[in-house]
Length: 307
Image (cartoon, rainbow, N blue to C red; front, side, top):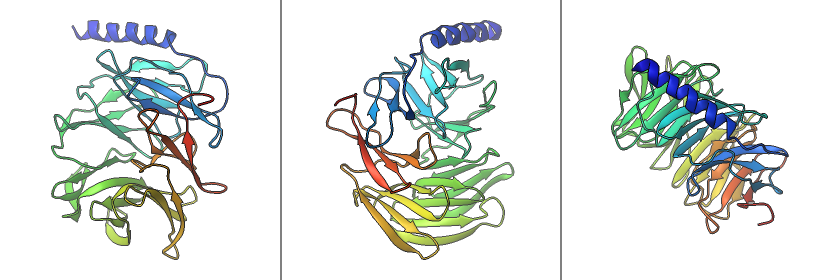
């Protein structure tokens, strides 16, 4: 029976690969369009970009890796890794052992490992071998998890009702007890964590001798990141209706970039200086992209060329 399932997965992957649309022009990144159940490219550069036609259609869910060259895709009841999104012929591979029906995912910094999570069941699975034949670890129970992150070693940082915890190979340890995390980002040996109370924390050496440091406070944060040169802290604030840029060394606000709509995330797109701020959901719900260099700005991306 297992052999038959593997064979069926290979057949489905071959058929789906043949259905992929080819794209012409520069690609800034890819987004999952939930309204149209598709994975779509952002064609062109911020300021002159638009949301292109579906690269992959009839998708129940998708999550794009940092760098924008691969994605996890839930289609026809199966989870696939699609690689080569920017190439002429993206390749499909069914994820072996995937049991969780994901509603969201987080990726390690370089995109070599992902963690999928189901809010409905509270189950999570690590997905490994994302540069080869993908395989899922055994599911783990993280009931009530809020913000999540995963590092390249497979350690999970989980925002739970009781606080923020590191789930490592030797068990669980508390990083910030009592804090309700709404966003977590791994930045090398450190973590950035945004709490629902507005506190923004950096935890130095989180995997060994963790040392927490309170950086600032922002009302209703929804996303957090470091700039490519790691000199600036980026915080997307829903109440602020803006992305705030702090100079870390001086601990001062360097820029406030107002958005046309409330930010809902801060997720890296294809380039290291390009971030998704709002995924959009229709003509009256704009897709917003942040570009941090050379001059920072937030750009509206229309749903089609000329719109």
